Amino acid sequence: MKQRDRQIPAGGEIYLDHVGWLVSDMERASATFERLGFVLTPFVVSRNADSSGVLQPSGTGNRCAMLHRGYLELIAAIEGVETSLARQHRAAVARHVGLHVIALTVADAVAAHGRLASEGFEPGEPVRLRRPILAPDGADRLAEFTVIRVPPEKMPEGRIQILTQETPDLVWQPRLIARENGIAGLEGVLLCVEDPAEVAERYGRFTGRSPSGESNYMTLALDRGRLEFVAPGRCRSLLPGVQLPATAVIAAIALTAEDPEATRRFLLGRGVAVSDVAPETFSVGPGDAMGAAMVVCGADRGWPG
Image (cartoon, rainbow, N blue to C red; front, side, top):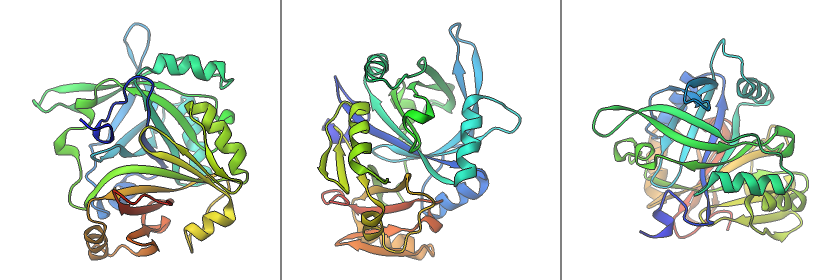
């Protein structure tokens, strides 16, 4: 299997796994994503397994739009459950509804924990996250993840985390993957920040990779996917007309489509406004995509470039 098509990194590789929207109204967010042609998993409450295996509420629940490569996640706080994660969620949503989560995946989360600690990120203890899911044979199972999170002040642009997918065959079931809109994969994330060089250097230490570029536009290439860091002026030129809620914000994601023109026609047929941003590349604005732009391009093209 080609590296591009593997969901699980091997050895020391690190992939862009998924991104997450923190939302206050799951029903509205779900309707928005379904209009875009995504298939959403049923809403489930996430739980963490303690040292004895007992499941404790995490304070959030989710629905996911699974892609052939990676996925998109909608996350809501659970009413009446007070955890640090729920409090972080409510604080983020109070700032703005939109993209707040970037999740990177590695083969060995424990090794990643040690590396983050050595770089001064002060990671918390690995979280054994569990979510109920219906297996292909119809049985009720638990999707399992080991998640490494760092204090919010260490990565103020959002909830930036590293995880290991322990049960990928449960998470990426063929029946859960959207096909109607033609979108195949999560390719990249664009962050709008005041000092791209400083932020990219920090993310380089976080991922163990070296950024490249210039002062107002830096790129961090992962083994699959990439992170882009741009100054506000450059961000406005890349996404004309898009109004950003802040300067330290996850502004957009890049999605690949096998046939971008077919995806464009599908979205226009759903009444979704699209804007050209580059040859064979178009964007769906934050108003149609829950607070962050979605840029769609061909699998061999990439965006911003």
